[in-house]
Amino acid sequence: MADDPLTSFVRTVLGSGAPIIVLSPHLDDAVLSCGALLGWAGRRAPVTVATLFTEAAPPPYTLSARQYLRRTRARDAEELFADRREEDRRVLALLDVDWRHVGLVDGRFRRLPRARRGGERLSRLLPELDHVYPTYRGHLSRGRVSAYDTGTLRAVGETVDALLPARSGGLVLAPLGVGGHADHVLVRTAAERSGRRIVYYSDFPYNQTADDGGFAGSHRLVARAWDRDLDRKAELIRGYRTQTDALFPGGRIPRVPEVYLLPEAGTANATPAGRRLPGRRARTAEGVS
Image (cartoon, rainbow, N blue to C red; front, side, top):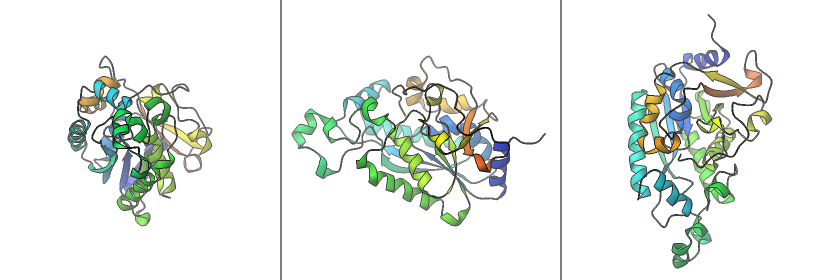
């Protein structure tokens, strides 16, 4: 039986021997959204998961950051992120893929340039004044990259350049930005500007309740489902123990196909551009990624 267009495309990339770079904003996003494909591709080609935002910062924390720590039953953000990095290493080792932890600071903890911060006393009283994204709902999940994040955007672009030189012929898997988390949108933007060959992945589990804000339609991307090797995925996700209880209350991880988006012109038998992904237009609930 002939492969579907997505499988044919992936086989072509794998057959060329070119590397695949998966850009993961946080320490679980690649497996949440691409775990089944990674397990399949990792046995056939050089695959590297590059996780960008792998560090926290010392207190004082914003209210949103403190709420996040409570949901993950953590007191210290830096200790939590050390645990998360170890979780990520263990899970990716099971998939036979390489990994890189880039070391940028997570959006909940990212601070303004020093010249823009208030005094030390004021910062202790109201930490939000010193942060690029003072609140989750009002800032971090609004689908926009802060003007103060230009340096972070540049750093992500430099990471793509370093891991996948322009003449390598490789492929970048980048988040679609479903749900509007600024870290996801920032990584998507850097990938788009890189000039590399890109396939976007639909951000799970946020794609169960939210959409991409129109990015797929405006870029004439076609959604394709990947349902191979899904049986193992829930086990892999549970390897991120610090996150799963908050992401999946009740412990049930839905078994749903992964969704990837390719340029319409480069896909045989393409469906109409702008096809909506599963889920409705909704603001993402405050997640833990």
